[in-house]
Amino acid sequence: MGMEETWRWFGPNDPITLAEIRQTGATGIVTALHHVPPGEIWTREEIDARSAEIRRSGLAWSVAESLPVPESIKTRGGEFRRHMLNYATSLRNLGACGIDTVCYNFMPVLDWSRTDIAAAAPDGSVTTRFDAVLFAAFDLCILEREGAEEDYEAGIARAARTWFANADGAGREKLLRTVLLGLPGSGTTMTLDEFRRALLAYADVGERGLRENLREFIREMAPVAEEAGVRLAIHPDDPPWPLLGLPRIVSSAGDVEEILRAADSVANGLTLCTGSFGASPRNDLVAMAERFAPRISFVHLRNVHGDGAGGFAEDDHLTGDVDMFGVVRAILLEQARRAREGRSDSRMPMRPDHGRTTLADEMLSGVRGRATYPGYSLFGRMRALAELRGLERGIRLSMSL
Image 1 (cartoon, helix red, strand yellow):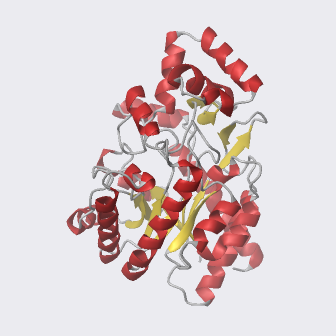
Image 2 (spheres, rainbow, N blue to C red):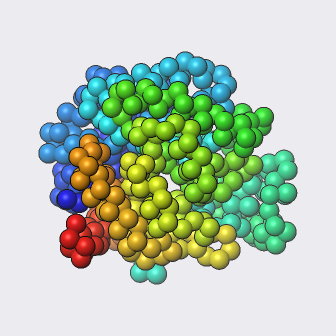
């Protein structure tokens, strides 16, 4: 058997159709009820309706990504108690409707962060990039966050201010919109004032507080998920280091170890995202895949290439800094072990994450009048899936798995 090949789909508003996804060879859909605000209940009726829509296309809803954790839960402020109860209800409803894997993250305010969502790759395709100088320029010169100067090396800060002084209005506006880009599928972007207010909510939380709030969330939700037959799979921070004075607490092997200790349950698991962890040269992805294999419930496969100056660009899936062969081999060995033991979670859903935008993708967007979300192209991800499928098959045949 092989990993379950899945594809992220953003629902009826996604310009990529379920019929097209089926032709990629993927069999599972990774999606969410994007129209439901964070903190509100995913009802069984809504879940069943979305599942039925997916089944009519010959596919299956494999993973809920994401059942979003509202900021109130991360800060344990505002309506966090109501939102915790609603989250538990949504988990029970997902389990009752047959959705057994839920990917979530605990990143404060921002989800994944980039400074360029249309960077040119060497072959002419389009990829995404995080540039440390440009991000510092946003923080120091656009956001003008109090105390920001202390978070940057002097050389980075000088280069950031030089960039800002030389940038025109369009360049500054592009950087602002890129950093504040809304969550995939949400169709929303924060204003600068809204962003400043969101940051203020974390002023008294700090790293220690955020870690404790995550532990409390897991301690309360893992038993609910286990009873509902659902596996929670936390997604790592992207990128895996603090940003804008906000702590990042799912960035390293040590962080993962601490999270898994919060509840010794199969319902408290990990989404192994090779691109998110791989952006830090401190993370050994093969070692992490081997070490945490028994608790990996979902796999995001993508690759990145560090620039040696605190930044990175997303690379082809089989090149870059991540040893994709070693990671996939570790996952397949774990899958084989689970299958031998007769475990119900041996399907190991995987999705090709963040494909490049190709000429064919640009033509398709022109015809339909709607561009795909950065990283979520049709042809770029289809190429990635084909490459990963070939890599997996070669490993399985060579090891008689």
